[in-house]
Image 1 (cartoon, helix red, strand yellow):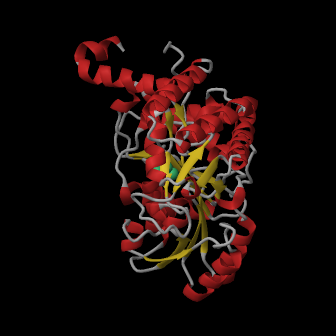
Image 2: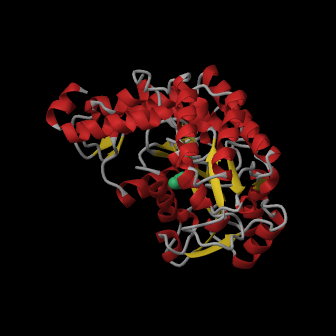
Image 3: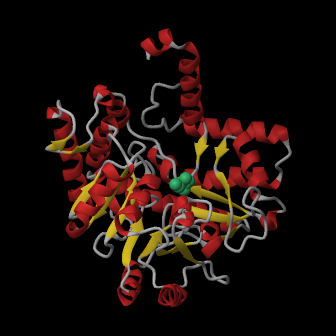
Length: 416
Ligand code: DSN
């Protein structure tokens, strides 16, 4: 990065500091990961210089000889990896991808049914503060109070009552596998389209560690940068009969030119995700999340749904005499980075909720296995049990750094 350093010392220094932070801290934010050096390099190419509104063979600018090949390759790899009939790789990220689906199939005021945000759904699944809740009649389903699990009978009853045009499955904080067949049945009963937002677990699907929604859903959206380990971007997978509607909704519906450097990096990530090594990675993510969940439960932590089947955990820290926010801040100071998160039926406010959310995707990318996850559980418990003990936080941060040092993060191997 010599040219960057010479041109802009301030940004150069900040990038270096962020490299160090990512290298030396235990990153448990469930939606984050480390991309490979190859994905990083593709992201930083001259493809960023090109405009290419339209689709391969039908662009509004000349000079697409190379870009068309890049996009076609990304689409081909995504179709093969997920078994999809049609893929659009242009959405800038997950929220625009979901918005494009709504633009393709809804008019303002139409009804959608998604998981409530405070129960683990996403902003774009109909939260009142999001365009998805402001422009549409957004109905939501919640989790079962006693178990924290999805209640398919309730989803069915809600769907029959509100007759949505789209039923959305998918989440940001639900630690269990979704029953796509049940959702499909419900959608068919009420004549709704069935959309799955698999952003969180796309990498697990790619690696065969989570059932695929593709055979069941009409449309599947996903970001590319979470468990899939690609650059920040998104894709929409759909049945061929919806291809034209989806493509028109992405461009010219809500976006202009695609970010071609990102498309290239998505193609690289999809190539990586097609390997046996990635399959092992995806299965290890699930094993690692399970190991941390067990370690925490053994120390008396209350995990929503009593465990996990995917990459993430949602932990109610109330019985530890601490709020989620206080726990997250103390942990960050101690070199363990996660986020505070509402738990289902939370009695506290979203900005200072009762829970913390954590995931195993990033630490698994750096090679952590069950042993290291159990060690993380020990460190995490020490901090949550004594969050104001500053010397302890410093000590734990040192231990976290030592643990990380033994497992250099992808793309950051040069940090010593
Ligand atoms: N912000 C992401 C997450 O953390 O789950 C979802 O888009």
